[in-house]
Image (cartoon, rainbow, N blue to C red):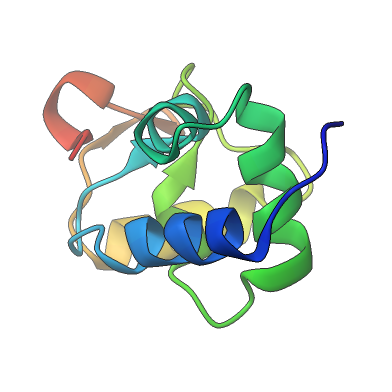
Length: 96
């Protein structure tokens, strides 16, 4: 993974903090907007410096949460009114 600057970390954090309740963004969306070379960098930032952010609003492009956080993420998204069908986020309606 390429070196990540503090400025890039803060940019991603600000973008995640700005995702409205009931909406989601993909790792790729955030990487593009932050000018990062790939979505995995966003994942790394979220893992290492995102516990105080609405992490549940950042999802894979497939709309299927990762198995390790699936239940909790879907619970939080459901509570916000995020459109879900069969354990999957309806990206066409939920993407911010």
